[in-house]
Length: 190
Ligand SMILES: Nc1ncnc2c1ncn2[C@@H]1O[C@H](COP(=O)(O)OP(=O)(O)OP(=O)(O)O)[C@@H](O)[C@H]1O
Ligand SMILES: [Mg+2]
Image (cartoon, rainbow, N blue to C red):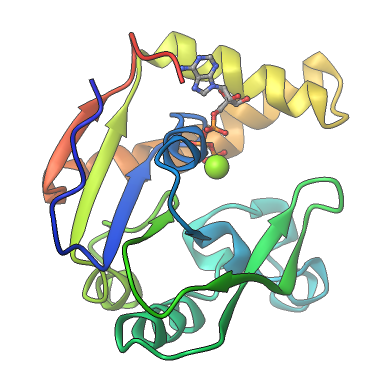
């Protein structure tokens, strides 16, 4: 079952491997969401940095910008508008998600718990972080199906999931012990 959000939480983080169900779980909570994915660098910047073929790895995100936005949310600033990731375009989109100045806000993404300075600064802005877990074969199948739905061939989807998502999943798994709570979604239906 999905645990209750602790009373008084301003920012609840949901971390987990690619395809583990973070966005689905976050969406089911009925709370405003600031997605880490909105802080993907755009392709134009990834090309500049020589990172285009590693899109989705920790260094392909603006972690500093993410921490700064979470700090604004934490401080109760009015009129904060977060970016989102547009899956059709495969690009971030600025100024897309209005964030209320009070109440609980959920933020979800792969790297909230990474033990690296840039990501520790992100974690420091979040009150409580859950790590979501799901059976690995199920996770891989869902991820391949989602890549196919967004236009990859089944072969290209499998290759991407093994090469790129697989490496990222290992980084996320290595950070799971830093979570406040591990939530197993294997038998969960949204
Ligand atoms: N309980 C579930 N039952 C069936 N399908 C699910 C369930 N949870 C998630 N899915 C599907 O699995 C895929 C991955 O889920 P989701 O997008 O929520 O994962 P994610 O952790 O946000 O992935 P990413 O790291 O790539 O953003 C989606 O296509 C989603 O619809
Ligand atoms: Mg997601």
